[in-house]
Length: 79
Image 1: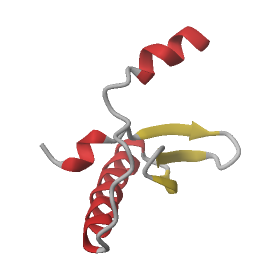
Image 2 (image 1 turned 60 degrees about the vertical axis):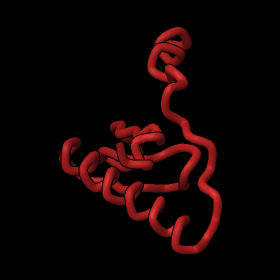
Image 3 (image 1 turned 90 degrees about the horizontal axis):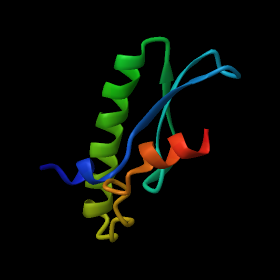
Image 4 (image 1 turned 45 degrees about the vertical axis):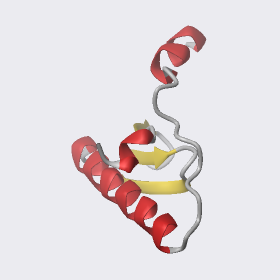
């Protein structure tokens, strides 16, 4: 398993931007955007991989993992 798999990746529609926006809370702010949801997710996964590698190259500790926290079910309870 890649270390990047330890981070939640979210792709959602943004009315404001009129595009899909990808983000990785806990690892970095911002992300990527585009018209194709799958393409945005693929790009997001690449960005997360690259970010993890940059942390390692710089000798910085990675932020705590965000996966395994059952965020999807927690969000359902809020909606």
